[in-house]
Amino acid sequence: MTGIVNLKDLNNNNTEHYKRINIKPPLEDENYEVFGLVISKNNLKSEDFLIRFGLYDLNGFSAMIRTLENSNINATEIKECYILWMIIGNPLKLSVFSPKNRELEVNCIKESITLQPDNSYYSIKSSARLSQGDTVFVNIYCSTTNYELINIKLIGWSNNCIYFRIFKSIYKNSHLNISNPSIIISDSDEDDSDSLTNIKTNIIIDIRMCILSSEYKILGIDNKEGGCHLDLVGYTLTKENFSKRSSGENPISTKIDSK
Image 1 (cartoon, one colour):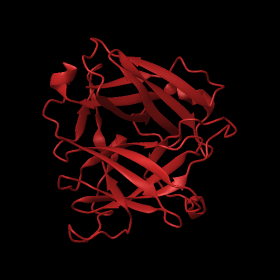
Image 2 (cartoon, one colour; image 1 turned 135 degrees about the horizontal axis):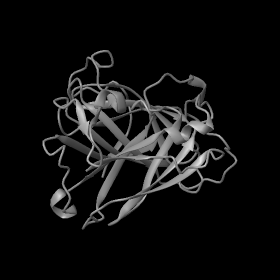
Image 3 (cartoon, one colour; image 1 turned 90 degrees about the vertical axis):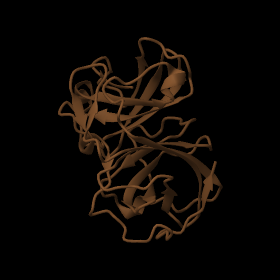
Image 4 (cartoon, helix red, strand yellow; image 1 turned 45 degrees about the horizontal axis):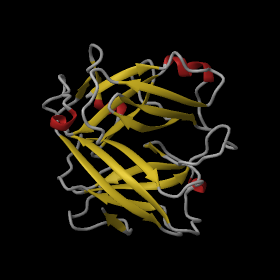
């Protein structure tokens, strides 16, 4: 199930926002995951915001949005943006189907990674073979409270792995108390000085990854007419960021703990 919701009711003066998204008819199961992002009025993904979904129940879910410190967007423009969301779960249990995306092939991955000192490069394996043109969405949760926000940059892929780098994420009004950290995903270039390598305690992050098949180019929107081109709203696996390694060879040394 997919949808788009506008942000016209948000306060222009805030850099931290909360948005409740209700679902009609209600779901019949709370075991689902929401993936999504903030998009501009031109239906392009925005690198200026961090978004995290939570408080799942039968009637809907909530989104928390933070404006990043290096944002190029004015606060007044948040009202011109939208949230593109996608519910992933078992349709038979949820009793809700996506009428416009019933044939869409989805591969979901759930892993835990222990962050390591002096290492900001990690990888995660896919149970299904990856293909050029696949689109990736990621949710990541940090198990340690009061830990600063983190930024993830996807840097490449192979036939069965996705590779990424972890950075510190600096957002506006960083003096705010953070009790439930989250992570933003990015495919833009970052300054290496922000790499997260000075870890002194064991930090475990839980990864939820949704991979949409390259056979589909447009994601239908169930609560409005039209759709979104996947290569404009997600991270697309391209020929340029493909790692020429065999399926059993991992170009990045890391510890992956499967759940």
